[in-house]
Length: 165
Image (cartoon, rainbow, N blue to C red; front, side, top):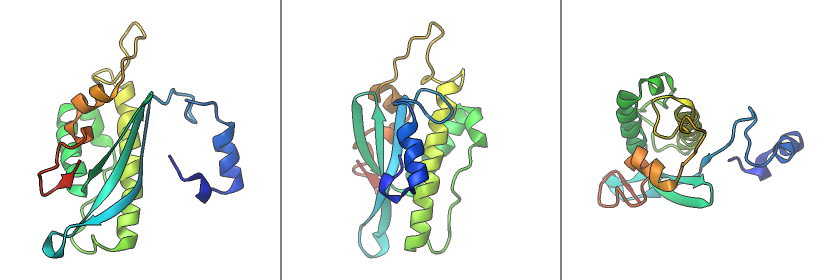
């Protein structure tokens, strides 16, 4: 989701004018995902940014904090399992300047776009466990998303050097 306070009047009207629960292309928005902010954690050599990922599925809402390296690991493992994800644009790794505020803000935008595209592809892919079944039943839940990828499981990386829950 975007911050409505940062949109101009025309964009706000577009958001308000949209039917609840539908995206601009008319598809049902069964998953809402955004990265509203990032935080600096650690000290010295272990200083790093973590991105706050907010996920909403129906009435369930949860938040996880993840480092860029966890996003990259998730992308690599999911594209091996679901080849249709290989075409998704993933924000490249930076060798220098990865602690620069402007670069981190830009990375936040790219990661948010990546996650939204990931769900768009997986909700329509025939090989996806997140896709509605053939009889139109739809059982998307927090549990289903966490089973799809541990990346979305709260607390799963708590004791790792790569992120927190």
